[in-house]
Image (cartoon, rainbow, N blue to C red; front, side):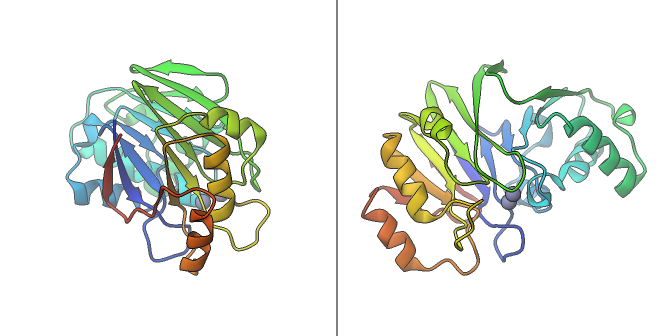
Length: 236
Ligand SMILES: [Zn+2]
Ligand SMILES: [Zn+2]
């Protein structure tokens, strides 16, 4: 499994919005910076077959219209599956209208919307979900195909998340911190990684003011912590 960190940043910082590309075909989150990062990597948009949106904060979904219309410009014909909150179809439709006066029906390819919640088997991947504690309903997702990746963003860890992340080859967890009870911190992410017995932990959704010492303290709880940069790739 190949995991590319398109962005590792928060909503208002100097890093790209947190977004991951798995095996070049599964996109986790689509914020305002996501299309630019895909373009920088030279990703063929028609190869992206599934998009997952964890929750409806702008840094996680406001890039949808640009992604859909750029794929249209590139001549996409392949269907696209979007997985996320129940309102996702309506939100995507409204965003397309608001930003470019377009509708989903006008796209030359089919977009199917699937609600996240129960486990799903899509395109050869098994997707399972667990709630985090955030200011909006948000779901962490685990993606399994031979290897297991768990992506938890945004929100503080929950017991369900420990269960979901169990024995992951890689846990990608948000570490925005800043004392907010509705976000995770480097230390909370490390405690989660340790309890879930994962192999590696990568911290994302990094706050612009994140202190190195905070990460060092977290490493005392869980050693193998990766601080990926925008556009960095790891192999599982
Ligand atoms: Zn959020
Ligand atoms: Zn966010």
